[in-house]
Each structure stands twice: as C-alpha cells, then as structure tokens.
Amino acid sequence: MSSTSENQSSEPAMEGYGSVEKGLSGNYSLSISGLLSESWDKTRGTKWIIHLAMGIYMGIYLLLIMAVAVAALVVPQSGGLEIIIELIMLAITTPLWAGIYMIGLRRAVNAPIRAGQVLDYFSKTLPLFGLYLLMLVLMLIGFALLVIPGIYLFIAYMLAIPLMVDKKMGIWEALETSRKAITKRWFTVFGLTLVIMLINFVAMLPLGLGLIWTVPMSTIAFGILYRNIFGCSQQTISENL
View (tube, rainbow, N blue to C red):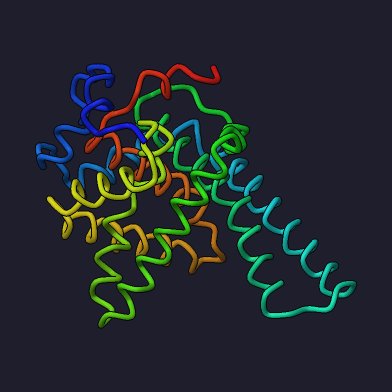
C-alpha cells in the first residue's frame, strides 16, 4: 500500500484544482450553487455519452440478474449460495461504477470521454471490490450504532472509489483520505448530495424525461466535487484517448 505522502509528491500540479494535500487540510472551495451550475454547463455535448455508459452498466446488471434467475431454476438455493452470488454481482458491478465516476471526473477536467470507459477498470476488480465491501461493512456498523454514524460514513466515504482509481491508493488509505477530507466540509457535501437527490426525484415526475438532463449533470457534479477537493492525476486525464 502506498503512503499518502508518496501520492502527494507524485501528483502533478493542477492549477485551480485541488490536491490530496489540500483536501486533507480542508484547503478547498466548495459552493453547491457554483458546482451545480458548472456541472449543468458541462452536460452540453455529453448527455448521450453518459447515458450510453449508464446503459452499458444497466445492461450488464440486468444480464447478471437474468443469469442468477436461470441459476436459481437449476441449482437448489441456499443461504450460503445466495451470499456468494451477491458478492459476485458486487465484484462485477463495482468496477463499472468506478468507470461512471471516472467519466464524470474526466468531464470535470475537460478530458475526452467515451461511453466505453465504463468498462476500463476491471483490472482493478479485486481492490475495488475489497474497498466497497469494507465500506459497506463499516457503514452497516455505523447505521447499527444509532444511524447517525452510518449517515456520516455514507457521505465521508463518497470519494474513496475514485481515489483508489485516480490516485492509486490502497483500500484503507482511500477510505481514510476520503473521510478526512470530506469531514472538513461534511455538511456542505451532505447538502450537495441531498440537493442532487431532490433534483433527480423531481426530474422523475414528468415521466422521467427530466432525467435525460439530471443524470449526466449528477455524474459530472460528483466529478467536479472530487476535482475541487483532490484534483486529478495526469494519467487519468491522458489515459485511453
């Protein structure tokens, strides 16, 4: 596992963006209105790329559901087998979710994006799966402890997955870096999350048509959030062009 200081020293200078060092010290700006305005502007010309990426994600997820349904007809089900199936599904979908995160981040730094980038992180399946599993366990423990600790961790760990991919961090390092940095502006990040959830809920009401705009905006918004706090590595900007 690499150290945080090593990640900081290898990080390229990104003028106007954040960095791991700035994130951990709380030296970053975060405006909900400004972030949403920028993410809205950046949806221009990218909506259908992001929707196609989401479609790839959902298509693979539905194929997994169908495979599980067929297997249930052939193989007698047991509690242990169901847990194994759930873990396999998590292992497959977590790299896809990392791909969605990274598409949002690349758009946030004006790097080219393509829908197929959602498939680019299967090489990191095991560490991403380990991170997500540990994150779920810690959040469940938090929710069991009077709920509030679980809500805190749900927000605080929000950027752990892109940290692992973008900054090449290990599991615990990514979780703790995300938690420590977000804690500096926890209520602002919590407010941003609530506003984005509300926007998407309202967008669902007119037959879901508003989601055409709000889903890409939300994806880019979390990319901008990450960029403002941690910046973006040069490798992420230049890879897969």
